[in-house]
Image (cartoon, rainbow, N blue to C red; front, side):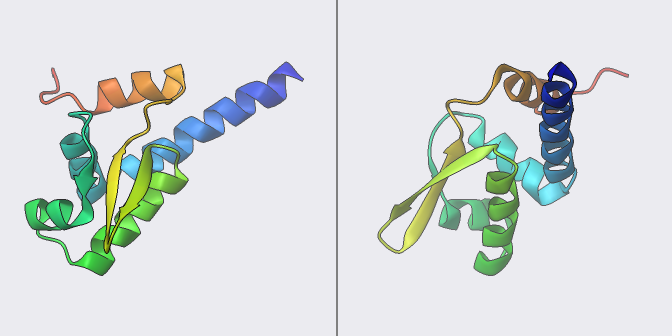
Length: 102
């Protein structure tokens, strides 16, 4: 039973890493790390992405369990999930640092 739990945890981490491996998604997560909700229109403007492209990227991040969304009239607002499991929270903390020490 424990092996299944570890495999599931490893799978969650792998899915998250895969989602974060794309530069636009990583940049979106860096914007969202301030803890606020951001309208997809703001993400589009800041990342120079079309609405359809940004929506696809955010869907990947949502499916990976990293973000949550809320519809606000015609737009969707995104933020990092406040209830992230500790392993995903630690992963994001490591991945979203501004500088990598070589």
